[in-house]
Amino acid sequence: MTSYNFDEVVPRRGTASLKWDGLLERYGDADLLPLWVADMDFKTPPEVIRELVERVQHGIFGYTIRPDSYFDAIQQWFMTRHEWKVERDWIDHAPGVVPALGLIVETFTEPGDKVIIQPPVYHPFFSVVESQGRELVQNPLLYRDGTYEMDFDDLAAKAESGAKILILCSPHNPVGRVWSREELMRLGDICLSHDILVVSDEIHGDLIYPGHRQIPFASISTEFANRSITCTAPSKTFNLAGLQTCSIIVPNDKTRETFHNALVARMMGGANTLGMVALEAAYRHGGPWLDELMVYLSENLAFLETSIQSRMPRLRVIQPEGTYMVWIDFRGLGLETKTLEEFVVKRARLALNVGSMFGVEGEGFMRMNIACPRSTLEQALNQLASAIETLE
Image 1 (cartoon, rainbow, N blue to C red):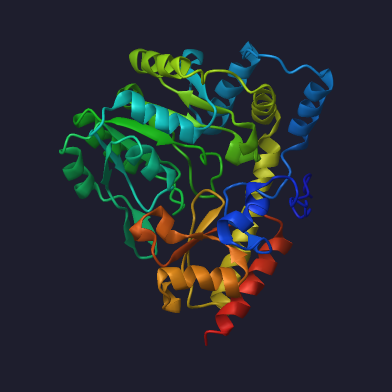
Image 2: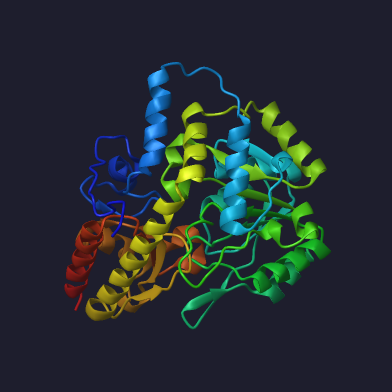
């Protein structure tokens, strides 16, 4: 018996939800079924809601400091969930992972410096580099036998070019890989030998399917930790993205001081009162909820795979090892990128993320968010299957 009702359909239209109320602006159609933006259609854990309500009832929302209990909750979470001993002094803050990535690129590189990314990858990785006049160096993943691998030979060659930073997506969004210790060690050795700072976006690191384990890059060795910055948050795990609270973990004293000074100089170090309460409540009390969420997501994934295999065999699901975003190969439909996007929107009446937004390697793919009630997913798959039938 489960304690939480993930089947509950919570109406989100009219709540200023980007995922639901942003459809008209993004897709030109407000009546699509949205499975795009990486937030969930589930309520956050009731323990989090309860503590937020108690804080709201206090009625004063002035400037806020981060108490000891806040840091303790972060430390305990990473030790319990990831066997990573995070020292309190390592923990800094930012309004979100993407703002942190932009600040890191600005702070630790100069215009014209090279930054490595691994496409197809979360699209802001491109913009935080190029918008600041840095040179984007791409180390594309290899797609083999229905899964993705890092191209270490290419990475070693790109590292030789004098890159200053590598932005690692771990787990990888959108392809769903959870990198093994061996893969992370190989990447780390290459970066260490070329004095490349590894900036590891681990925001999806709690959302791991059975049979896989998230290994924080900085937990592997002291040497890796000293040349790394880890960006993480409870936002994906507990559906708290709108509260704009994330943790930036920087073990190296000099690197942390440089980052912190840049944060303070831009007045970005303050705490979001409710975000802080939510983070602490989630990390202290959200473990059982997360465990049940992963069971539900696993069942949603199995439902998706069965539906596609039986009703849409021209599509191929790339089996995710983590995250609630599923990377689907639509190339079997024989549609060009623009035609494919129009087909999904106009015929299937769905809002998905077109694969090309994650790099040219994503052309012909789509990213689907399965963090929704089963009834919503079933409706989406019925719409998609019916639309594909019109092509045959």
